[in-house]
Length: 147
Image 1 (tube, one colour):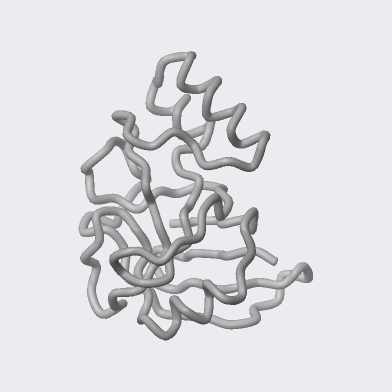
Image 2: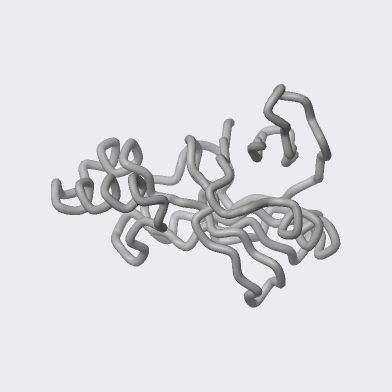
């Protein structure tokens, strides 16, 4: 199983192991949705291959933490070698990357509504869709975010 987020289509699809769509949900993105995330606070939703690194009930209900930044993001943004190594080690262990660096972090798939792009970089769904996805997806599920 994997999550496929298609930014330009404003759609999240839950895919099975045969690359078939199990369910599709409309989504909202960060307030500046075009292009990959470049730094903390830029309002962009990242692009790349991640995994669900955290599940929690947060401000916007059921929330799936996305393992942003990954090693490729850190290298692209010329992060210090120590940070790249830490991100790599945590990914190898299936843990969330360090959040709070200049690269940004705390990217979630959560509720709150999908009518317009409004998040700080997260992916938002309707509250009902967020609950259904939260119930269906285990930790470690792959998350592909494409333009």
